[in-house]
Length: 308
Image (cartoon, rainbow, N blue to C red):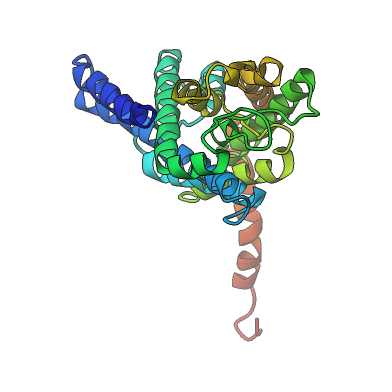
């Protein structure tokens, strides 16, 4: 029964999309594209965790998880960047709405698609690694302990981490994400070259993982954590997924929202607002062009007999 959860989820999603007559073909393409982006990203990310955990380190280690999520983000952006904007993170979507870069009416749509994509990805990995998970834990699906497997799908705090410290951990991690994303997309600063955005963002996620990930698994994304957590509650781990870690589940949902706005605000206040106006920027470019052309003008005035 548990293994059929992913098939039921796919049937429900397909039915919902097909029955939404108010959406045009482009609208349905947008929705499915948004879900597929998150699905691809999460399949690679969660798959890397499942492989490391069930393989007891024989098929990878902590760096493998970081690479899985980082490259998963890059592939998701390549697949859906031109269709849905490759929104994979509710904290990013919320911050973009707050700063006027995304319409508020799109926020519920993005978040719903992100949750559906995450839920389906968790179901897919559960199906693929069903035998491995049960072999690893002996059929006892637990959230904590030496054979815990719930952490394959959602994040949980380290034993030493308090809720306030975990909240701060998620705020800082997501703030760094948005701070760097704003820089990578700022055409008046030093943006990622056209076409290299996916790998740049993937490397950013990898960087956050290898530097800020050990405390609680660097969720930095409400939809990345909540969708799979709901799946595990249904698939056999039960309500303990919401009670573990002193009720940890709400931290990776709320803290990334706070962190996203914080990071975007820092970039806005300390960098973006200090960009020269368009007229000043154009004048600077013209001045630089004149400076570069000055040696050429001098050469034109030289005598033909002078070697240059």
